[in-house]
Structure formats: structure tokens, C-alpha cells
Length: 206
Image 1 (spheres, rainbow, N blue to C red):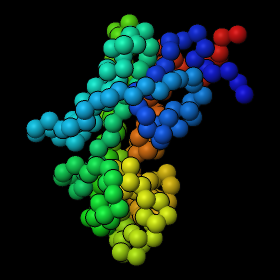
Image 2 (image 1 turned 135 degrees about the horizontal axis):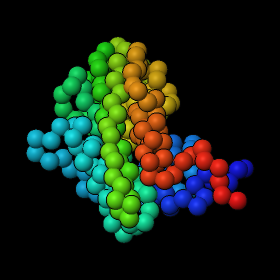
Image 3 (image 1 turned 30 degrees about the vertical axis):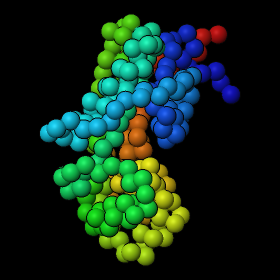
């Protein structure tokens, strides 16, 4: 296997314990380590879902960067809205997952995936929010039960994994970045990392 592409570049840290984000970052063949940011994810009064995701992505990256100022730190957060209203979070239980999928049947969910890349030593800080619009097909109770039996998705906002069987619940999908809905927009991330000094396609140092 080729050497990681960030040999000789700043250390890369993912400020997240999400297995989905780790798997996405692994696609870039970069050496990185994972740190838990320990960030309070409560929304502020009057904060929109997109603003919440943006603030938390920066907060997560900043929390880890505070003790790792020489590293390039990635933070990310995702929120969702139903027909542009309210915040749809992770269900946590099958009962909430059923309720979320019933509410989503035939309707539009917008996922706001925020990404932040920071490096205090380089005075580098960038943040972006990538939206994904997902139209759910009309879902019967039987289809919902079958889906949840095969793929509970209790740790996914909206109770559907687009990268898995959840795609069968959807009738359309629109985004500038197909990886955003999974939790880490790799197109935006690659751009930010290049500007921060880490290029996934650079020749590794010998």
C-alpha cells in the first residue's frame, strides 16, 4: 500500500468519534488520528439548523486545536430540517425512528452538513455548510418496519442511511457533494486541506 500522502505535512486530526466520518476520511489515504472534542451540542435560542451545524463544526475543531495548535484539525456537524422547519436529530430509539420516517414520508428533508478546518499555528480557519435535499417516497408502515429491522439507523439524523439501505426510502437526492449526507463533505474538505498544506494527491516524501 502506498505511503500516506501527507508525509512531511502538518499532523491531521479528526475532531469526531463518528465511525462514518472516519471511514469517509480514510478514502483520502491520509494519515490522521481521532480526538473526541467533547462539545456541548445544544442549540442556542433562535439558532437555525444551518447556523447550529456551522457553530458546532467550528467549536469541535477549535476544542481539539486548543491543545493541538500545530495540527490541522477537522470538525463537522450535521442537522436536518423537514420541509424547511424544525430540527431533525438522531432518533436514538426505534420509536423515534418510526416517527421520523412516518413524518418524512412523501416530504423533503434538507440535511445541513457543516465542515470546519482549523490550524492555530498557521492562523488558518475555514468553515462551509453543504446542503443535501432528499425527497422521501411515500412510505407504508410495513416498509418502515422492514427498513428498521434491517438497518435501524438510530445514530443518523432523519433515521435513514443514504449510503446503505436508506437509499431505498428516497425518491430523489440533490447535493453538490454526494458525501455530505454521510457526514463529511469530501469535496470541500479536499479544497480546505490543500489550502492548509495537506494535499491528498501530493507525492509523499521519500
